[in-house]
Image: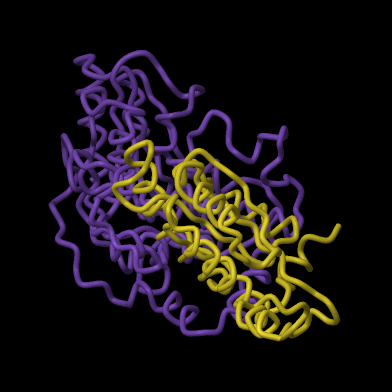
Length: 162
Length: 294
């Protein structure tokens, strides 16, 4: 019983709370993460046996500075309902300044997406270090929960057909 | 004023200070103008400066078809000069290779006015971008045609329509832009007219893998317009040529002005005003805000 309550609390209950998703719909979240911090943090979450939503697909890049805004668009075009971008904390970038460039890039890019009518709860950003396995699990659950509440990304579904 | 311009161009060519003068000449119809490229002093009399001189001539500095060996003189309104400064900043041209013939400008005719054959500048025929212009005199020039003009306070709120869109819900904004972008035919006139779209191979031409589909389809239309607006973020100078060139009347300036405002508010940077500065998205400050990052 206790573990079931915990699962609900963590947002792991299947098909719950989705608006237009229908029975059993689960959100697809794509995560673009940096190799040195967040990917290692996610790995730590795994070795620590921390539970988080399985709806996430992680794509590893050397650095958040490598993440082209086109990746986010492509993720939506290919069926993602939400995107998470995560990397090293400022000052800790393996390549010194990649995350600083990414920070500026995404500070502006998200405003463009918002202006075009994309709900920004579908595109989220975090700094997760290699030691923050728990934060990774929390981020994944949080993003999945929010996207599940919003339902499938119908806008992109419609334009991606054909 | 045309006379002053012609004399200056003739002098530059006679003294061989420049190999080419890029300016405006008479257009195909009465009260229209078009870009001309002159290389001999005798041709200087073709140069004109009227409210129909709408093109941003800076676009020709990165096109190999119009390049000649040697220095180039170019006539530039305030907005055109800003584009020149971004090109200098991005190392596409050198300041010393340019002779900037500044044009003190009270405004140019709108697309609609030109299509209607109107030639006189007034409140109705004035292009929208001129109503919010802050560079009636180019920021820097080697010679100025006309008397220096101080930019008046903008007669309308430059961000009025943008603010209205921002106040609506995401769903309403999505509907609005899907509607506008549904007219996009992927002609890329916006890209061709833009002085800052000079990539030898545009991202949209890459097919292995294909990031942005080329056919006029909702998905690719959205991707193209998002990416062009983003690749111009912190670089667009608001010359409005993209919107003027668009055959489907898509309000491209809304996207570009929105992003220009974001860059100004977030990083205190305005493109094309000072070419000694680093472009906003090519640099960073360790103290940049990160309120959107958890």
